[in-house]
Image 1: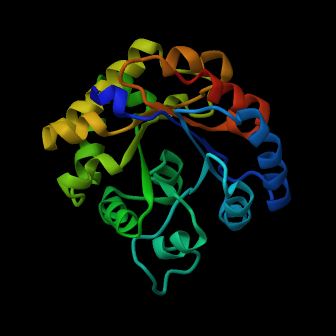
Image 2: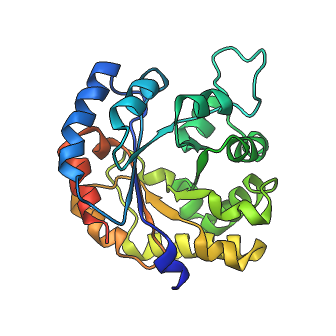
Length: 255
């Protein structure tokens, strides 16, 4: 079995700051019948913190995993407004998004913090989804590879080689998030193959097993083309994950 064959596709929906607990539960009730019987693929939803416990309960026994949108690197402490990995693990959450560009740009999340968050998540039994990607200005300057190299190498510094493949990486070109712009198939494949090569610099075996997702204005209309790319192992879906029909259609587009 090749590395690509061993990488099970993951379609994860990042709800950001949308949906009350009641709205989240209604979404799950609508989604589950639509994706029932879809084998060979992992599906995840990433609700806001208040809805996590309810959605873990609502999805219990289904194929849907629940992910948080962020966490603090320390197990406990005087960090008002933060949530730790052990707290998430106790809820039955499967993993967490880390390093989303909105967290980096709007809330000052640094590569130094991510160096600590990734091993903390793994130690607690959570699957991290590490987001990386360049701005439009960086792409126009030809700095896409420089930016990706910096983020991937810095953020994974404290992750042991033996655990590298447990980190899911999501390539999200910042210029495509919520903008309606989508990386072309060629741009997406080129960037994600480069990310895989960066992981291979640490461990070729891990690189073959690491799931790398595409994110950035993924919709039902473009999902099939993006998900068919050889190095793309799924999608981190933003706005299109808020509607059960649309999200189910993206899940259906996975190979």
